[in-house]
Length: 81
Image (cartoon, rainbow, N blue to C red; front, side, top):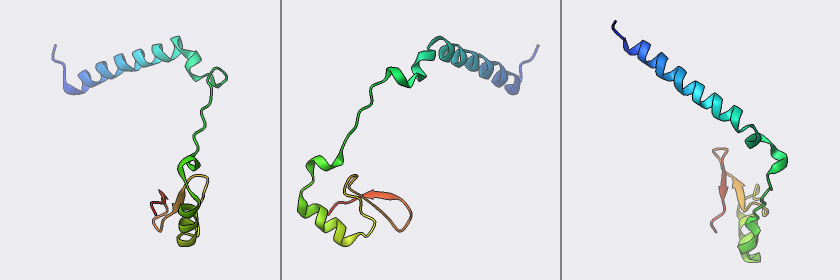
């Protein structure tokens, strides 16, 4: 019997799909959000008033809580002033 690359891919893919399904079912509590503790990280810890004032003056969309501004490309970027 000749195994074509397509048949080999189907066999290997179905094996790893079964392994992944087994891992998820055996560790179903991994997705339970009530057992996790949330960590909150604030970017404001190391910022001084001069930095915040400079960023606010240069970028209208600047958010002092995250130390980020909205660029022309639509991406949020960290203020490096």
